[in-house]
Length: 245
Ligand SMILES: Nc1ncnc2c1ncn2[C@@H]1O[C@H](COP(=O)(O)OP(=O)(O)OP(=O)(O)O)[C@@H](O)[C@H]1O
Picture 1 (cartoon, protein in one colour):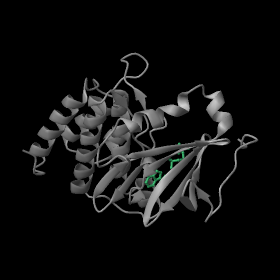
Picture 2 (spheres, rainbow, N blue to C red):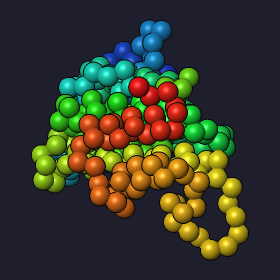
Picture 3 (cartoon, helix red, strand yellow):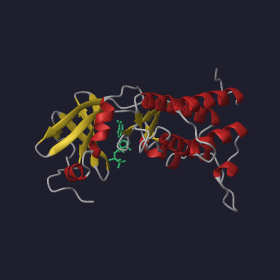
């Protein structure tokens, strides 16, 4: 998809309202994501493509509207909107870390069970916060999550919506969480020749762990709320002796 006529890509060392471009981090269908600096600090600047902004009839504004309402240490803070003639974008807090996608598929890190439980715990905490604020993320995936010093950060609220219990339900996040955790489990899996089996047969999982994942994924009765997910996860920690209360 080419840029709309007025869209301009900014180059390193150019400035936008005092923010100096360091480099482009990514270009999606809807925008360009820059790493920028202001004084000594680094930030993220998201430039929305003007053509898409028109076509999407407001949908591109959800990330901005939603991030403005959130305050959580694992979610980038909204800093400010920047708008002038042919530019529409916003500045976000820069979060440290590599994406789980890079850690799993480039670094080839094999996550231990303890690490997986610690990551799951943090993601459940983030989801509990989001759902309590009336937000469903709908895109918790390995390229949208950063890991730094054992802390998880959740990015990319482009598909996030206000929960309305019709089209946008909180439980939509559970299958994403389940699928995300499966990527972590598979990071240490040794593939064997032969017939491909479903994950719940292939992975070596304790019964309760398997049921927990199946319920997240909707293979068994889906959890009704993040509070229920948290409760079940808590009992799992106790059963597995991972230090839960
Ligand atoms: N707040 C942030 N802190 C640090 N890095 C970030 C932040 N936001 C985005 N990034 C980095 O920039 C990359 C691109 O960001 P993002 O996924 O939001 O935009 P995009 O790739 O242009 O959009 P999309 O993935 O929706 O097409 C991410 O993979 C991440 O590495």
